[in-house]
Amino acid sequence: MKLNELTAYELKQKLSKGEITSSEIVTSVFEQINKTEEKLHAYIRYSFESAIEQAKICDKKLRAKENHMPLLGIPIAIKDNICMEGEKATCGSKILENFVAPYDATVISKLKKAGAIFIGRTNMDEFAMGSSTENSYFGPTKNPWDVTRVPGGSSGGSAVAVASCESILSLGSETGGSVRQPASCCGVVGFKPTYGRVSRYGLVAFASSLDQIGSFARDVRDCALLMEMISGHDEFDSTTANVPVPKYTELLDRDIKGLKFGIPKEYFIEGVDAEVKEAILIAIKQLEILGAIPVEISLPHTQYCLPVYYIIAPCEASSNLARFDGVHYGYRSPNSPNLLEMYKNTRAEGFGKEVKRRIMIGTYALSSGYYDAYYVKALKVRTLIKRDFEEVFKKCDCIITPTSPTSAFKIGERVEDPVKMYLADIFTVSVNLAGVPAISVPCGWTKEKLPIGLQIIGKHYDEETIFRVAYAYEQSTNWHKQRPNI
Image 1 (cartoon, rainbow, N blue to C red):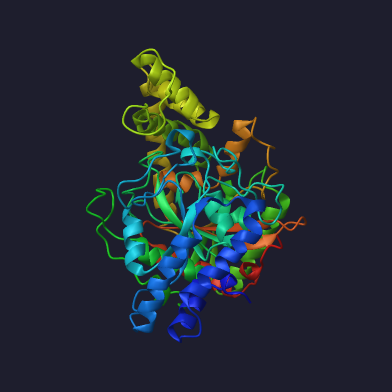
Image 2: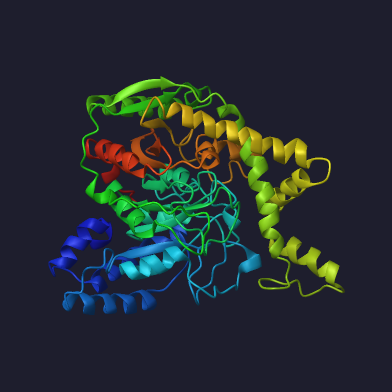
C-alpha cells in the first residue's frame, strides 16, 4: 500500500520507528495529486515546494527525536475559507480571488504547533453556500467514486482530497451539514463538533450562530485525533466554551454495550432513497449486535428545520457579507462613475448566483415589516428544535439517522432548482440549529457503487460518545476500507 493511502495513525507509527520520512509521505501525496487532480479538482491551490520544505523541517525534528508533536509530518488540506497568514483565502469567490489573509486562524495555529504539513487549499461552494461544490468561482469539484456526480458541499474539496488519497486529513466548515453531507457522498468520515467546541477565529463567516470548523479523515481514529488538536477555548472567540477537551483517541475502545441510541421516526420518511434506508437499518442491526439498545424517539419539530435554517442562515449571511463592498479589500469593479455604482457593480460582478440569492432572501427577511414575521419567528422555532433534542437526550445517549436522503446526485441535476438542492441538507441542518455534535461514517453502497453515510448525533460537548459509537461500528464493518478507482 502506498503511503498516501495510509491513515495518520499508521503513518505516525512508521515515522516514530524511522521506517519512513515526512518527505516520502508528501511525495506520495503529490504523486496522487498529479495523477488524479485534473479529473477531480479537489484543490483551488496546492504547492509541492512549500509542502516539501515543511516536510524537511519535520524530518529534522524526527531525527532529533523531537517527535512529541501529535501530527508531526502528517499532510493536511485546508478549506479555502480558513485564514492562513500570507496565503490566499478566496472562499471560492471572485470577490476574494486575490485576498491574502493577514493572520492565522486559531485552528491553523494549533495545527502548526501539532506539526502538521499544509499541502493546499481545497475547493468549496462560494462562501460555503451550497450542497454540491458546484457554486465555486473556480469550477466544480467531482466525486471520486463517479466523476459525473457531485461530492456534496460546501466542503466538497476537503472530502474529495481525503477520499481520493490526495491528502491524509483535511479541515472543512459546517453551517448546515457542509462536512457531514460531503463525507457521506464521498465515503469518508466527517465530524461536526458542538457549537463552541472549536474556535471560529479566522473562519470567514457565513452564518455566525451556525458556523463550525469540522474534520475529515478516512477513519474514526484519525478524525478523533484531528479534533483533539483543534478543539478548546480561545480568547479570540467569545463563543468558545471553556470546558476540558477529552483525549478522544484514548476513549475509543470503550464498550458500547447497554448504550441507548434513539431512532427518530421523522428521519425515516417518504423521500428517503430505498437503498439509503436499507443501509441505515442494517447499520442499526449491527449496533444492536454490538450491545447497544435502540429506542424509538420523536423530534416533532423536524419538519420546520429546513425553512427555519433557510431564514436564519441567509439573514446572518446578509449581515456578514455586507463587508464585501469593494472598499476595504477584495474585488472592486473598475468601471463605476460614483460610490453607489461601485458598491452595486462590485457586488453584482463579484458574487455568484447562489450567494446573491441568499443575500436577497436574508435582506428581505430582515427588512422593516418582515423582521418579526420571519427572522424573529424562525429564532423562536429554533428554540423549540433545540428543546426537542434536549428532551430526547433524557431517553438516549445518541441518535442514529441517515446523513443524507440520497447518495451523490449528478452534476448539474439540481443547479436550476434551489429548493431541490436545499433538500439535500434535510437531515443535517437540525444539528447546526441545535448546536449539537454529529458524525457521518460510511455504512454501505448503492447498486451504482456510491457511498452511503450513517449519521450519529450526540449531546452538547459529548463528542466522546459519538466517537465511541462510530468507532465500534466502524471496527465491525469494512466500509471505511474501500477506495475509489479513479
